[in-house]
Image 1 (cartoon, rainbow, N blue to C red):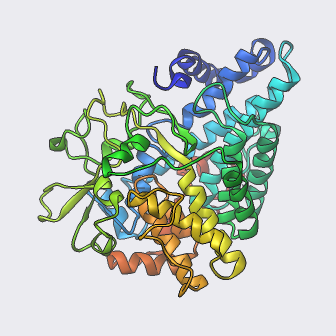
Image 2 (cartoon, one colour; image 1 turned 90 degrees about the vertical axis):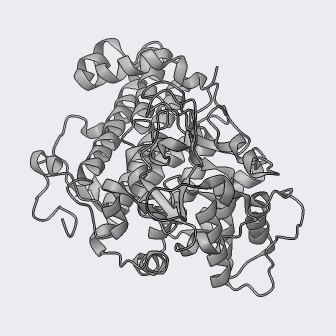
Length: 482
C-alpha cells in the first residue's frame, strides 16, 4: 500500500484537475468547495502539477542537473552544460515548467477564494486546506522567482484577470513569505496521509527562502526550530546500500522526510527524473534510460577529489561506458529496476529532508556569528558522519574541527557537503545561484572550464505569455539575452 496519498484520491484528483481547467467559475460557485472532501480534492489538484513529468521531479529537474559542477548534460542537454543560455530545444521545456507552476497557482487560488464560502465545511477544515493551498502557492512562486526573476503575481483576487504585469522580486518574495507564515500557523504537525504539507514543511520552506535571501539569522532560527523539535532524524547508514532506505523505490517514508513529492509505480504517477540518469544496459530502470547526464571520475575535479570512503560516492555513481572514455560514470541515486514505464519509477522526490536542514543551519549559524560555532560544527558533522557510515550523534574520526576554520573556510566545507548530499535532487544550481553570480561563475569555471553567460542565470519568459498577456511588453519584459 505504498503512497496511500496518491492511490486513494487519484481518480478524484485527475477528475478535479480536468473540471477546474474547463469551468472553474460555475463549479466553484454552484457545486464544488462545499464539503471537506471536495476542498481536499481541489487541493490534491495542486499537487498534481508539481508531480507532473515536465516539472521538478522530471524534465525541469533534468534541465537543472545539466547545470552542475559535478556532472554534464548529454544529447539535447549537452548545450545546457555550455552555460550560454537556452537553445530552441530547451526553451520549450522551461516554458512547460512556467505553465505548470502557474496552473498550480491557479488551482491554489481557487481553493483560497472558494473554500471559505463552503456551506458544509468546518472553519477548522477551511483554515487547514487554505493553509495547504497557500503553502503550495508559495512553493510554486519560489520556483518561478528563482528561475525567471520578476514574474506576474496572480492571486485569488485576480482570478478573472489574464493581463498581469511582472512584479518585482521583492514583491514576489513578500507574497511567498506571507503565504508560508500563514501555512506555518494553520497546517497540522502531522497529516493523516503521507506526502501532504505540514507546519514543518512550511518551516523548512521559510528557512530556505530566508537562506536564499541572505537573511541568515531568520534562516538559522527557523532551521533550529525544526532541529529542536526532535521530530526528525537522519536514517542510519553503515554501508553504501543503506542509502536505499532513504531513496529506494519502495520506501514509504523515513524519519528525515519533511516534505517529498510522493511517487508510485504507475504510468505518469512515478518519478520521471530517474529515467534521465541511467543507461538501458545497466538495468537500473525498468524502462531503460536516457543517460542524459554523466560525469568523469578522473577529469571532473568534484568527482576526482571526492573521498572514496564517503559512502555517498559509491552509492550515487556507477561506471558505464557511454562512448566517452573509460572513466564515464552515471548517477544511480534514484534507481528502480521494476519501474513499468518511463514515468513510473517508485522513488519519491525529496524536497526538504532533515539533512538539508542541518546543513542550512550550519551555514546560517556560521554566517550569523562570522565564524563556526560548536552548534554549526555539530550539524555539519552529523551529515558528514552518516556519509561515512558512522553513528551520527557521536564524535568520530571523520569529524571536522573548529580549530583552523574561519567563517569562509567553514562556508566552503558546508557548500561542498551540500554538493555531495543533494546530488540529482535539482538543488545544486539554485544553491550556487544564491551565492551571487561572481561566486557561481568561479565554481563552474573551476569544475568545467566553462564561462557562465549572464543570460544563463535566468530562463526566458515564454513567448506565449508575452503574446497573450497584454500587460507585458515583449521588448522590455523578456529576460536579458533572449
